[in-house]
Amino acid sequence: MAIHAIVHHGLTKGQRKEWRRKGYATASLYGKGMEPVQLLVPVQEVIHAIVQRGGKKHAVLELSIQNGSSTLHRVRVKEIQRHLTSHDPIHFDFHVQDAAG
Image (cartoon, rainbow, N blue to C red; front, side, top):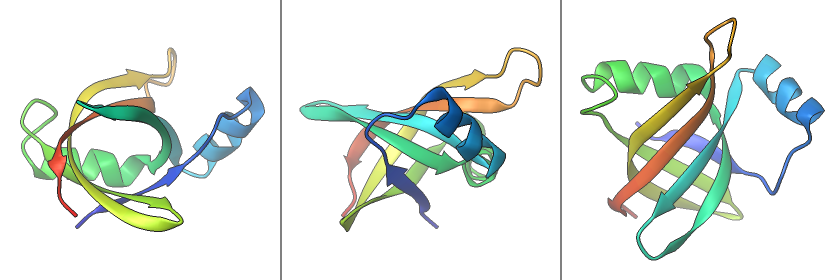
């Protein structure tokens, strides 16, 4: 099951806080030969998918990017940034393994 991500083009601090209240975190998608893409992803879906697939070091996730049309990417989680005091995930770095669709 693919994780649905939303493309964004820069958010203010207040907008990021509002999205976090809704259960989303910011994310960066990058890979060989492509421009980095800034995303919003549902935190619980990402964490659930990582745990289901054997942890951060082994998990290959499917990410469906919504930007007019839908694009599917197979990605690995390179880094998870967490809030200083709550330790909740606030940002993910995804590296594209290959295009899945």
